[in-house]
Length: 100
Image 1: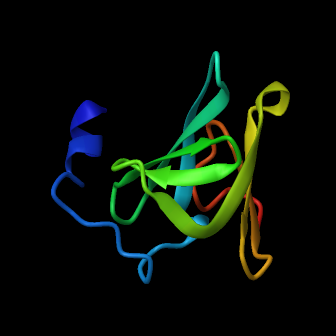
Image 2: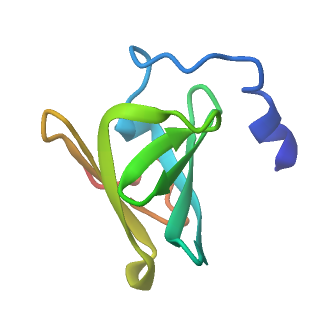
Image 3: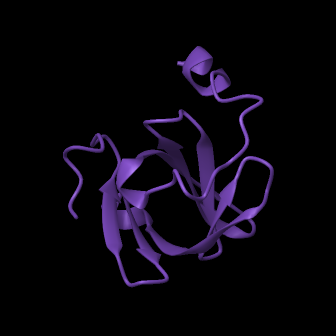
């Protein structure tokens, strides 16, 4: 599984290629700052973190216009774009199974 995440190294995040509908929820964890979700873009294999309501790429830059909420009890994440596009992701579901 580790090799899958390494395939995106060296690639720059391109907001024009990005869609919240291509993300899969891979994990949810808690630290002293709160809940964090690990998401992976299934097209580019790039990883993202949802933390404190904002989505970040692996260079710790916020993805413009995307906010979200981690719901640990339901093992879900709800992402919303600036134009009110909403995507709910559940741990263990792939991109095709996710609710749009």
